[in-house]
Image 1 (cartoon, rainbow, N blue to C red):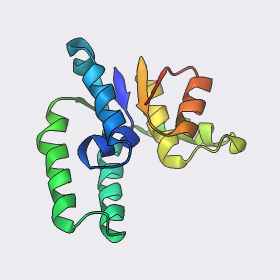
Image 2: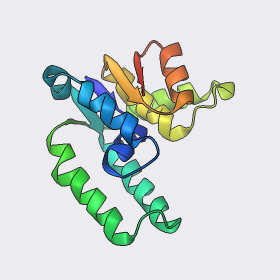
Image 3: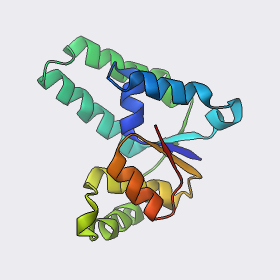
Length: 144
């Protein structure tokens, strides 16, 4: 499994400064690797939150955010595996967050816990803190 963090997913769908980098990474994936892509149910929640923030800050209109969510659900989620979130993921994320100096945020700890529990062979991230902690925990990272 190649687990996609929301930080990679958003710029694949919505124009951002790092969208070109995210698309270039995606385009370098082989057909086999594309079949290994996965996101979690948590990713869907976090993506919707990101769209809400973009609407509130004026980066997107409501219609653009709705279109991005439609694209997520009708296109992207049809091409990747969807991993459910378990109580074990929350407990593992809490344990990770007890390393108070890591800088890891709760949302990223949950992604990392999900990827770790599912033995993701790679986690695609744009967040440098998440990439550092993931590597420290032994989860291979595709820093984009």
